Image (cartoon, rainbow, N blue to C red; front, side, top):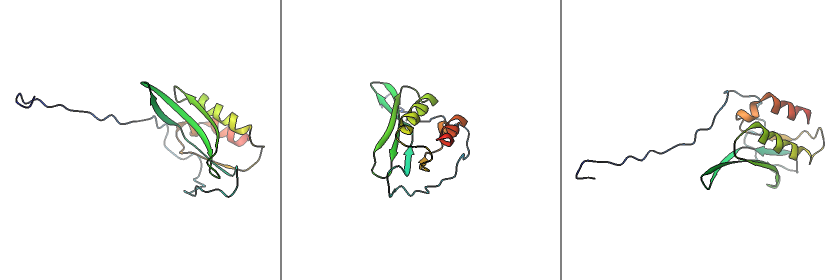
Length: 123
């Protein structure tokens, strides 16, 4: 290839998820304080993409910052609101209403949806 002046170009594909509308729906109450003094006081969540056998899989867990326990999770082949809703329903079974816990997220498009905000407010 070198003798013919040919060159191989490898393009690096970067992951680019849909970011939704920019803006903040809720204030950052945790401010990077990822330690909790008691269970069910601070939870965190995010959606993570994995490639399994050439298939994209999306994991959406809720983790308790007190001890790292996975409170609930959902695995899906597409990042959609049903995934988030199912994860919340499973988590909310484990706590009573008005616990005043903090559920921290990166405020991606799923977490900016009005339906998501309503689910949190109701609980």
